Image (cartoon, rainbow, N blue to C red; front, side, top):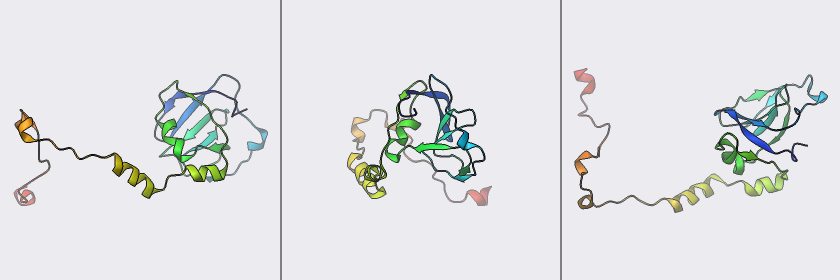
Length: 148
């Protein structure tokens, strides 16, 4: 049922988690009663006691007792986290092998970003209002504490 449901990003979202809203009844199960706390990671999809799903994000708690129906793969987590309220979200099952293949290593991410970065070079002669730019910030004479 979860994979067949079209969700929308709810307006209740912050760095801890994002509520998913949908048409239809809550997601509940009798198997969740007495569920013990377990480790949680960002991307986990928890079903609250009222059956409302939340995707846990960067500053989620580290342990909890709500049942989890799955975890958003890291490659897609930014898409969920940055979705505006009302954005349609659909979920699909992914095997562990496929999730591992989608995972970008830190080294690969840095290399990809390096390829995208271009130095910002402007010739001062082309900047007519050069004096309006604050070219140096946070510089002191070094005697601040002595004067203070």
